[in-house]
Length: 300
Image (tube, rainbow, N blue to C red; front, side):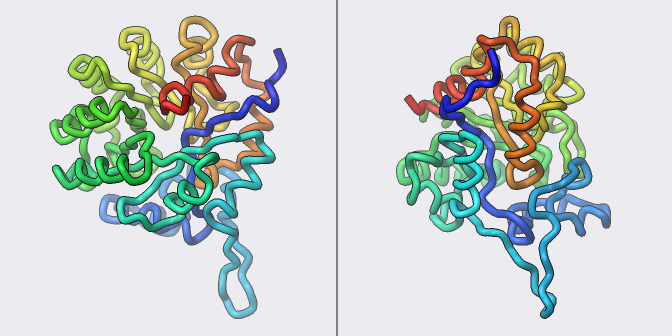
């Protein structure tokens, strides 16, 4: 079967700001980054990507930068062109920000995710509950290596968040593998997921950002734990790990979930141009692009 058209793709990782405005998204990392080069990047993993969308802004005669549209004005034209029906976007507990506006103004096209800081303890739990009640929160997200101090996947500070996700019946999307930003990686070692899934057998846990160089271990753990899934965020399709493609084509068609990385590091045009060459078998495409995400996010 050729790449399917018009099936209503669900993108489980999409940003809402582009250009220099997008730098605000990574202020929480400033204290953790020590190298000088990172301070001059539009986002802290920019060295890993080429042709980053909107990274080269037009500068006017007065020295000002020409910014692209933001929020829904930025995303919807690209989503429509790429056949994306729904995108999951990051939102804020204060009700402000482009993500919140996307969800409020276009509830049929955007669903809310939130990344709490586990170091905030009970306040993080209050924020999750509040956003679930007020915004229909569909997922919690986590960046273990990106917190200051870092909070490993299996850290005690994460356990109340996992428990609340189970209680609210929402998934957690968590970065795993070597992080792109120049911060230590051990907090995101894939082996840490094993203990979490043992302690929370009802948890729906979706990895982000590749799991490399432990993608083979990720496959073993997905075979072991029913609630463990893998999303393809931050990877151009031509770089999807072979172990993940093979797993999707055999026993893992219900475990692999499409996620992009627009507008942070990849354009949707590039993603879907390359997507057509991914050697998925016929039965994989629809679950990968739509059905698995709808099930995990409870969209049905």
